[in-house]
Length: 268
Image (cartoon, rainbow, N blue to C red; front, side, top):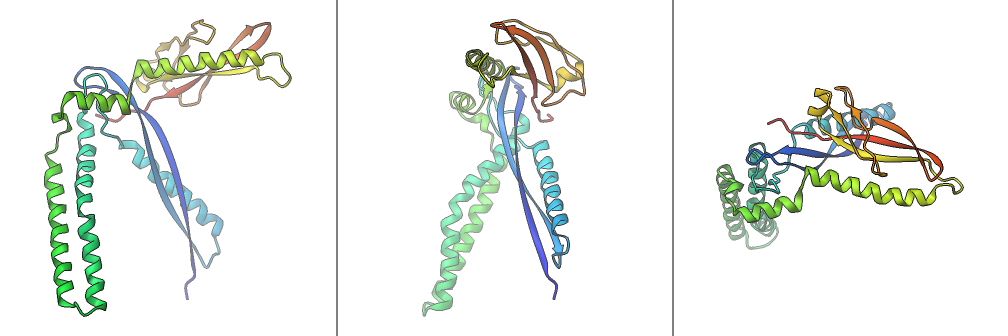
């Protein structure tokens, strides 16, 4: 008898997607999240540790595959346009939404099968189950047909803009929000300076896109004390790279560290 121990690993990831609107050129961002599972087998439980590692590796590979091309159908918060690369996702979501109508018929179909099997209703229950199956099939076909030509840009503009403002943010507003939050946190940081075990390192998030890194642009983030500094980007820079700046604040030497955050982007 073959004894097999299967291990499952689940991983999750999120990314901030950067979108350049095809209609109005507004840059906006939204958060994308995905999860994935991986499996590893240990025959006769002789390689449990290896099976766990394989499960984790496969989960990470699947997650990377999902995140590469994944998107959400989020309209531009400025003009309400849903981008071309988002249309397949919008149509899939539409098909799923219509398909939910079939849940009662699926439950009725399964229920009537049990009724026909275990009660005297017999053929009548089977007939109802068959009709439920046909109804479910009809809803599925309708969902596919209706969603194949669905275009979310036909919705009223105001409705699309409202959804965009709810689910996304203009890039400039997104980055401004981080700068304002850092300024507020810096005030609290200053209050702690000089106290026992106080931190002398303050982090400031800096958001850039891969185009800026590829071109070797110079970005000039504003530090919480109002001073602007220059950071020269390189193509091999990545998330989490740090750019420290020494400063004296209230008589204390501190490190203000600009931490790079890189937007991800779907290929058009």
